[in-house]
Length: 184
Ligand code: ZN
Image 1 (cartoon, protein in one colour):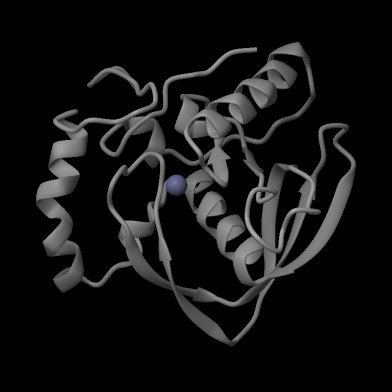
Image 2: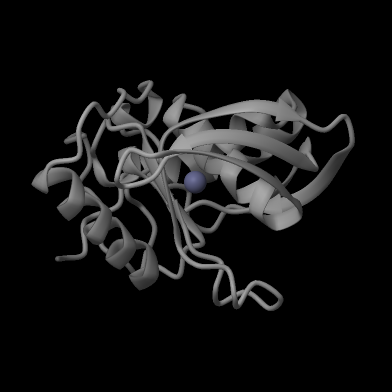
């Protein structure tokens, strides 16, 4: 296992739609292990495969360091599909390992229903709310090529333009390994 470099805003793979995983082979198992290591090293709560340069439809979540979620086991979502959402929405601040140092309040449904496969490709249906629903939606967005900043209105987004450009050009300090510019 190893820590992989995290792709950053501007990397093309973060704009691509993820591809379905048809079988679980050794490379997929290794990818999942590496993603957990990469996420923990960067103190993240969730990580999508394209954030480490893979186009597989896969994300992971670990909230066990968050107060109130200690008992929630780390989760692997393969080929996920959100099939329902609450009408009720909430406005919560988000951050992203691929957009370091930028945080913004994003409006999302408070609860969701998702179907996904586990690492044995067994299908599960999960209803989630609050923080778990929030992180799931954020990571699910990554698999569609969407950043949380895409959900900001134009006025607000304008304020982040300069910072986003800095990230794209690697003109910031980041305390975890990231991809070199123009590779992914
Ligand atoms: Zn993210």
